[in-house]
Image (cartoon, rainbow, N blue to C red; front, side):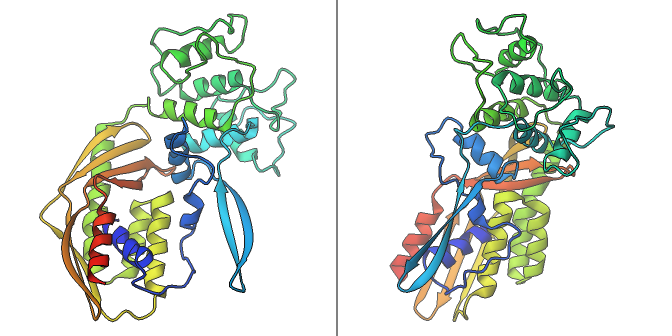
Length: 371
């Protein structure tokens, strides 16, 4: 993914190529930019992580405007963190986040039909013991989910994989008569639930951001394995080394295969979109090469059952550009942290890489200096 980022900068930021607006990715990079959530939001990182890994999808809003006689469309992606969330919507997010698979169906609900968009998610959650339903035997998928109901589902979902033996934390507005008392107290005890001081407000309708926050905290309490540690390191190293090799060979199809096998979500879209920009660009009278200098190291810094972080150190890349009106030769440090998620089929894939230094500014300066 290092070379892709370099080419992405050179192609888009500095106008080295003239490109068409077409994209080849299964899902465009535009689908991964949250327009309504800013970095100071308490759930920014969690919402971004869920969007980047396709656990959630944003709401598309398209604006049509005219400029210089041309009609353009601009699509915004809204996450709507402050919106309430239905029982069906929450079930979908939980099933996606945990990569749950359906088991033996022992219970059905009269208000959940096979033609409903949420049918498979409800069936999967029910077969995994997460959904019990209402006293009248219905699921009521379109009802807004309460904070207590959400806590109960999370507790049942993660009880097999999270250690809930820590001392329970109680809230004055959740008595032992509340059916969700144990779930709330145990989830609060391990930090999945924060509450509002001494209150939990169990009957309040949950917000989308609260749902993502609680599920994300639970996901990061699941333990990873030594086998996972070896696999995630291999994925990161393979992505780096094979990308240099395939780029040097100008093997576009090989790169597409590599990206599909080692990346997902946001980073897959970024990779495929960039390759398309290269293919669709007008003829460029010059060359751009990027070669690794020395050897890098990859070290797992955080690992749990479904998410991992790998620190990449000493990844030095020599970037050489030769063109009639622009030439430069420089080495940039692309060390950083790779973020991975285990997919539904058990494969670890990179969904983002954050760099230690702003090498983009370095490349920008080099381009401007040589213009």
